[in-house]
Structure formats: structure tokens, C-alpha cells
Length: 257
Image (cartoon, rainbow, N blue to C red; front, top):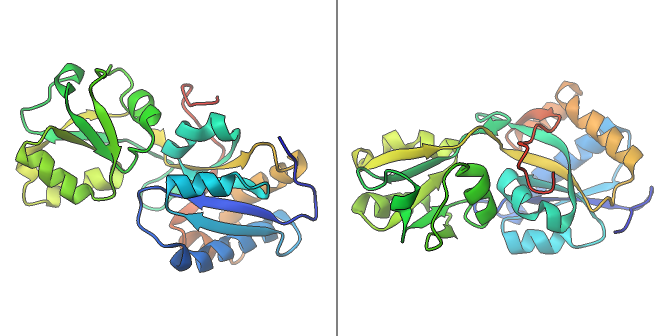
């Protein structure tokens, strides 16, 4: 465990596996956010850098660097890697159009799935499929999946839903935005929601491995909580589809808690 001292450049790692986005396209918005956060926290200008990786592997690699003091990650990533990376939640994101929490929905072909037992031999595909602990224990809390159920990540949800509707041994686990769009599909009548999770956090900013001194973490937390009211900060938030932050409100079964 290492500690980053004042005056050393710190890095905020954004990682969103499964969601579209290229590092080069995101960088100007990340830089804008980092600059606004530093200003609000009263840190020296330029003392916080920001990088983005759209893959689980790349994000883990970047978070392994000693200068990576903060992680901005979806809740599934946090659940899967909080223990490994020693992640301590700092703030919870309020995402535009979604909020601070969302429900995940398991969608099957109409008439094929009536409970956990009927998923035997099926594959669950999801943008969060890289996080099987999240799928099994956070989303499907109360359902005990058989050992032959596979969990896979996909960024091609529309293609997966077509296969579900066609009768493949497949079910799709959708986030709130994806689930809300099911009714627009031409094959929507062939799909049926069979399970919905309790409300779960959408995304978090967390301290990595206690690398950020406690005083700096507190100043940044206070700044992020009031960032929406800071002059000029709204643009930085809006560019990342954020409405601000709240104190973490995590389920009791969250990994590492």
C-alpha cells in the first residue's frame, strides 16, 4: 500500500467496460472535469490528470500504476474489483437521465423462463458480464443460479436481444436505459422481463489503495458534492452526462464493504 504526497501528480482513471467510447474522444472532457474538480477542491492547478479506458483489462492496468489515486467506475466494476484494488468509495455519481441508482432487468424470450431453475444451460449476456459477482449476487439477489449458467460480456445488446427473441438459450441483463428501449424494438412482443433488481448505484468515484492522503480525499469529496453549484463546473459535469454527486449509499452486500 502506498501513499501519494502533496505536490505529486495524481491520476483519476475513468473505466467503463462495455460502453462505447474512445480514449481520444473522451480526453478533452476528462481534462475539463479534472480541472474543475481541482479548482473546486482548492488543489494546485494541474495536480490531477485524468485518463480513460473502455476495457476492464486496460482499466485494471492503469489502476495498478502508483499515480492512480482515484477510480471513476460503474458499480459492477466496483463490486468485482473493490477488494482486489482496495477501493474506498468517495462519492456516488448522479447520472443525467438515470439518477444515482438504477434497476437491472433480466429479459428472456416470452414463455421460456419462469425462475432461476429454468436458466439451466443458458448464457446471461450483459454489458456488465465482465462482473459475474455483480450479476449473481447484486443483481440476481434471491435467485440461485445453477452451475451451468454462463455469464458473458457483450457490447452488442441489440444483436443479443435478437438472439433471445429467436429462441437461443440466451437471456439479456439490461441496464435501466437499455431496458427502457425494449418497447421500441420490432420484436418486443417476443421478449419478456423476468426479473428486476433492487435499485443499485450507477457509478462511483473511489480512492485507490489509500494512495490519496485523507485530508486531500476529504477536500475533494466536499468539492465534488457541491460541484454543481460551482461557477463554470456545470459544463464539466454535463460533458460527462453528470448532474453531480452524493455521498455513497451502497447496498450492504457490496464487495469490500
